[in-house]
Image (tube, rainbow, N blue to C red; front, side):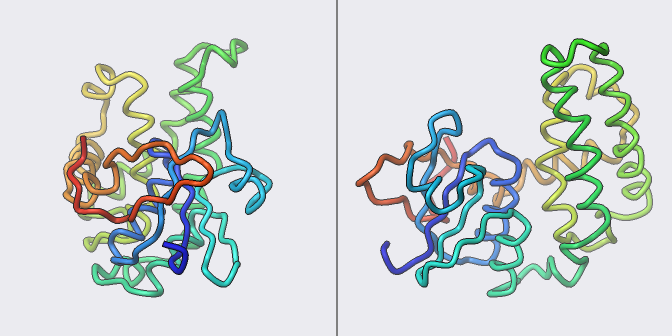
Amino acid sequence: MAEIPILYSFRRCPYAMRARMAIAAAGVTVSLREVLLKDKPSELLAASPKGTVPVLVLPDGRVIDESLEVMRWALNANDPQGWLQGAEIASEWIQACDGEFKHWLDRYKYADRYPEHPTTTYRENAETFLAKVEGALSNSLGIAGDTPSVVDVALFPFVRQFAGVDPDWWQEAPYPCTRPWLEGWLGSALFSKIMAKYPRWETGQPGQQFPSDAPAT
């Protein structure tokens, strides 16, 4: 494990999900260290003081601590599904997701922390972005075209979070194209692989090989 990259990750983090999706699709092997964000190991903070995941530590000591750059690193090594051919990682879609949509998603998901407005206000503001996603998907199978691309991979973990805040509302919401698109990604074998549960990593322990053929639990 010492000679392969180390990936600090947190299973439910959407940024870490998109990174693991790219790594698994590329077939690149890393040593995964599953961490708790409320109790961050000193090794993670030493590698990246901002303390977010994913963090990829390469064998030569270089550190990649932005999810999109981890995706780029993995897919530049191997991109068998052609995700980089379908769109750029610097896509305006991804920028909008990570910017305005994430801003309102956080407030919708944690509305009790932002009592100045009702939950519906935050949801409606987030829907501005989702309406654009719905429009794109009404014309093609993917957000950036009929071929799945890095845009779809980068966005669906965040749409998953949005849908999970109020699942009953989501099922009735006016997103007949976005729902099956999301369900397709969540039902994929690749997503099942990247959501396999790993024990929390402790200092002194080896990481877990990722991707693994172990089934999700």
